[in-house]
Length: 321
Image 1 (tube, rainbow, N blue to C red):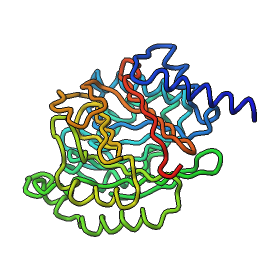
Image 2: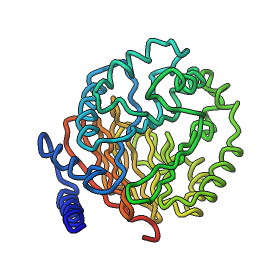
Image 3: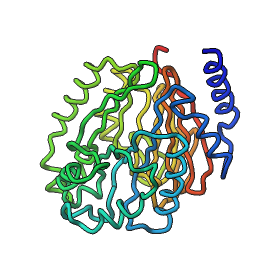
């Protein structure tokens, strides 16, 4: 026990010392490896969104660094935050984009793990059900429904509830759009909110985090999502959720408001300029992803660029810990 405790103390000291710095190359691998589940006693995973662009350069660069990070951390799964296929989603389970944007891009052995995925607004322009159905065909694509939850185990006995939401139907302007309108109008947002409320309320997990495609608050091009501020944010506050992860804005952000941390990780391929930093602890328009490690009492989030730089690090304590 003494050796393990010393190891954990080293990792925590290293994480604190490197917060907000730039780490690249072999040093990145060593830092990520030092935070692996076996050394840290935590659950690691990678998370990103807005990626499906048929293997363009930025997507390939992010994919390569994700492979490095996933191997260093030994991640058991990856999270996709939506806009999985540009520009108009997919037509069927046989759409060429499955290979062009997914299977032939994320080829690293370390990325051949389950991908817990949700839908984005661009996915809503196509066949949403085909993305759900592909779960039965693919060994790693996991989307059981438009919204769902999973409870994951953290080494040592703690658990984390991850609530995967479907945010496009909440954006009222989408209902009027020609391509996505029918898909959006077919969804019952009140029923989803009732499910989110019940899922958060009934869970006994030590950690509770919520994930969605659209931001609640954002300094990126799209900015805040008023409908989520009005309808989803109160549920996060009510149930003591203090981490929300999203995509949609094509950048990397960390914001904090009212004790809740908001991470935008919508930089899986093409990026766009940052517009505002009113709540930002960090914001940068660069392709990348997040490497997350959830321990018994602290969640570590590293926003990492496509060149392998840890651009921003945050340690978030578990509520009540």
